[in-house]
Length: 259
Image (cartoon, rainbow, N blue to C red; front, top):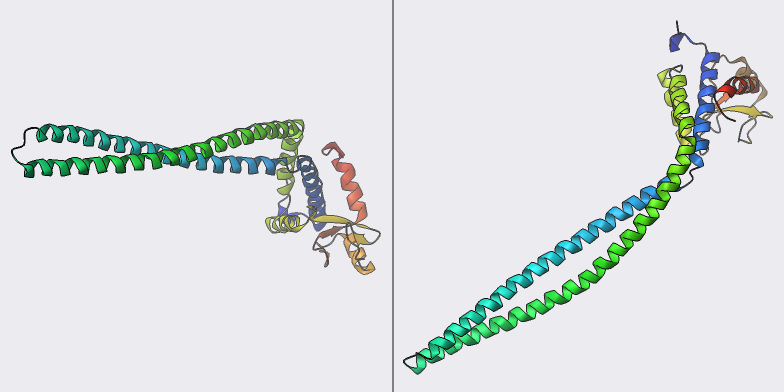
């Protein structure tokens, strides 16, 4: 029957923490081989989405302006019909007053036609300009999509090479995490998140924590070697373990980790 985490000794906790660190460090190595590719893929996705939204906006504006042109053409058609009607009526007027009234109506409809034609030309210029921009956007989207496809294939290739090992290590990381009490596990994760190299648990190298130049006092080195309590380095904030524990756990973990 497995021990409850509260019943596990400090030494067992330190070993479990260091084992978890070994696994997580290997996971970091695997993910680092992908470099900036995941970020590049994500950035390209966002860029393409933004361009597509812009393109859609231009398409909607072009459609609206085409609808306006159709409306103006209907105005022109209606005005021409009225002009023909008024001209026909002029042939049957009884006096100059009626003739002049119809002439004014014709003049008004001709002005309506001129205004509608002017607006139609303006819409046409806008459509032409927006269509050019839309075409440029479409070309850019196509270029970005081609680039994204290449980057995704490159990333998928890298992922496929290590996916099996990564999945296995993730399951092992979860398994080893269950051996550590929740409070200590949270501390481990917090230290890892704040660490540039992802190290939360480190051994001593010539009396100093790995990656640090600050020596640990001899008395504290003895306490670390005794494995009676969790000791945090006051400079780096990392959990400290002794060299013997490091070597023992590295040897034990060889069957799990590809060093």
